[in-house]
Length: 121
Image 1: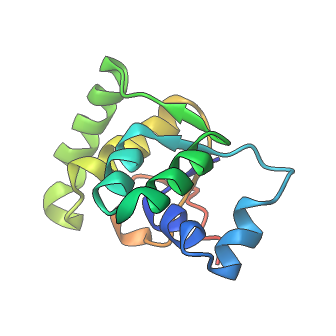
Image 2: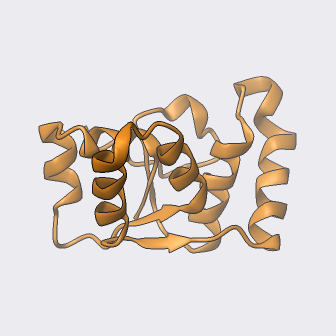
């Protein structure tokens, strides 16, 4: 299951619902390089950065490939005006689609292209 940035932020802020969700040993979690960029942009200090990299080491990381870029471009064409879908969310959704994994997010509005979106808490 690929987790969206908002869930990773909650986990890193020690929110109990996020911790319970992410620490479920039955679910293999992944993250997009796009989410890594978003997380690093908000890091405050070396301690938070270290904590972030420790967290990332427990996840599978999906890079953006040309096929993921093509899928994301299609999502942008279809949903950017009607649902205000941005490039980051389109790439995250495309990563989940390409790798055939579920996507978990707290924001359904940003992912109209994901029919089986998981809203974990």
